[in-house]
Length: 133
Image (cartoon, rainbow, N blue to C red; front, side, top):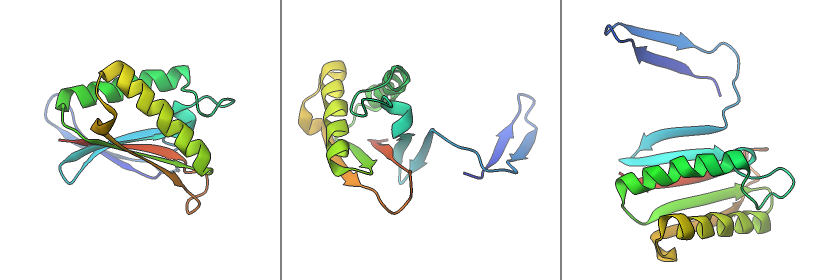
């Protein structure tokens, strides 16, 4: 991604910083149509050898995502998993769904889970969480 960061310091002075070279981004959070959207790369969330198993870092990221879900407490939450392999995407959906059921103690119908085979953007395999605001 190429990006421009706009900020305000503690004294109230605005500033801007522009990235001159592309930067690899593993996760991003933004608002769209009144909803919170969190996108995380599959490499960040899942183990490199067992791609259906959450990595240690992935578990930490999932903790944060679950905190956002708890704060809004609005369902259903949409989860879209994009992978090079639809079977793998379905396995990753099941992993996320099991975790949500165990950690958040909510029924399956609290989430709209979908698996997609992504071929349009090379290696842009990601999980998108759409949380109602």
